[in-house]
Image 1 (tube, helix red, strand yellow):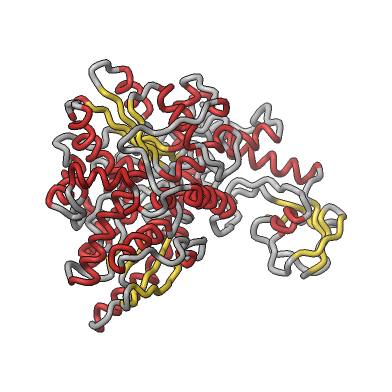
Image 2 (cartoon, helix red, strand yellow):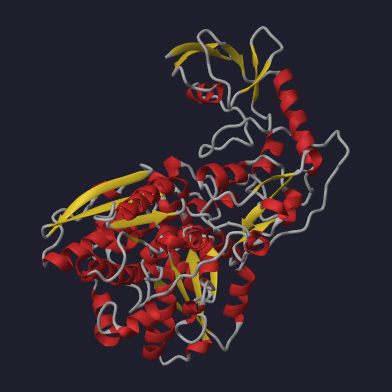
Amino acid sequence: MVNVKINGNPIQVPEDATILEAAKLANITIPTLCYNDDLPAWASCGICIVRMEGTPRMLRACTTKVTEGMSVITHDPEVVKARKTVLELILSNHPQKCLTCIRNNNCELQTLAAEFNMDKVNFDYYIIDRPIDNSNSAIVFERTKCISCGRCVEACQEVQNVNAIEYQGRGGKTVIAPAAMAQLTDSPCIRCGQCAAHCPVGAIYEMGEIPLVQEGLANPDLVSVVQIAPAVRVALGEEFGMKPGELTTGKIFAALRRIGFQHVFDTNWSADLTIMEEGTELIGRLLHGKGALPMFTSCCPGWVDYVEKVGHDLLPHLSTAKSPQQMMGAMIKTYWAEKAKVDPKKIFSVAVMPCTAKKYECRRNETMSSSGTQDVDAVISTREFAKLIKMSGIDFNSLPEEHADNPLGPYSGAGTIFGATGGVMEAALRTAYAVITGTELGSIDYLPARGLKNVKEAKIDINGTEVRIAVVHQLGNVDQVLAKVREAKIKGGEPAYHFIEVMACRGGCVAGGGQPYGTNDEVRKERAAGLYTDDQKSQVRASHQNPAIKQVYAEYLKEPNSEKAHHLLHTHYDEREPYKNFL
């Protein structure tokens, strides 16, 4: 610990703390713009400048470490004037189109301008009108609004290790784009949306599908059906003043019906279905040699996109099971359509997801139309869903609790924890252990799979067979696991692991690219805790015990991995190039 003064007040702080962190400990807020808790600080914007007491020296609080005896002034007329000048410079290069911007009333630059009482800009406006890149069906780059803070680049390169975007040009001509100014669709972009989640303004955002949803709901010839993902229920409430992790499942079902959806289902149900298919596939690979080991999970479309582009040697290791979104889409337009006596071509199927990559996934290849028509017609993010609720004049907080419709609504606790890192692994182990041994897993709560540790490794004994597992979240952490997998393959013999869960986003789907803004590790923990609470409250906590899942196999699919199940619920993968138009 070191002794410092913040605005004349003595305080002890850790010796490796920055001035910004020290100020927080002293309950003082220093404004920032380029800084984000998830990203390495790099002092790009200059908003966080402070002054050393007794000198005119200005320091950037986000990167300057404290020293013994340091005395810092965070707010005085000189400091405030300097910050205001920086803001004016940024605003002089930024379009004044707040009312029609997707981030209106949820923009960090707009908030700072209000806090600093920016009634005018004392610089000439110099705004370069750049073309919008909406090529990749998930993420939109509106570069005219870019303030060059670099948060998207840091998220893509340092956090995700995807390196799809970088700085092009210098000075006022700087542009953030893929190499050689390629379109996003031609780059290594995996559509995870972490660039959009970390952008402080409206320069990067998800491809909007609200108009498509409204059009479908207004069409009297269509039967509207909707599903909601596990992670949506613990994050949506934040858009209405609730705490992160607060369960809003029943209110969501009520809101969807009031918006106009005729049939409301729960993706948790198809998460249980995914476990039955994926778990059976794992058992086949593990005990009967029916496929390569280790087996990787395949429910994260960002991860699948990554492997198809830069991990061609790993494609045989991906589970062929579709994601819960796509399994639900297929079952709605086949199993449910037959039971409801509805023409699949007249079904308008919408998914509410925490993930921007899901917008691409529903069109990824021909297996996403296994029903004979596109299985999922539209995907909206949690943020879009919140806007749709507000546009519909719904008082979300006052809604009653309602239930999803049968038979694609009831779910187990295993289905709901899919939204947190380690949840797929835990859910799969609950069922795989029971199927192999004939007995339930001793402790249904498999704690080694939980938490925000970058890579979680564990071993579990299943009927005398040691199963080695790994759980990885945040794509930048996956290389260390892949190195072990590849090294074991070269040496031959036993694989490094048998089963590996990968989620592209830190924390898993609870922090997907389409979730409410402002996500950090505390928020991730609270959202995950909400899912584990939902699991604890569930009467049925394992996928194979879900009566609605037993029903669909008895009535329609026969058994996991059957011929019909393979046609409807499984997919294949293709080798693609990260820079396809340059090779």
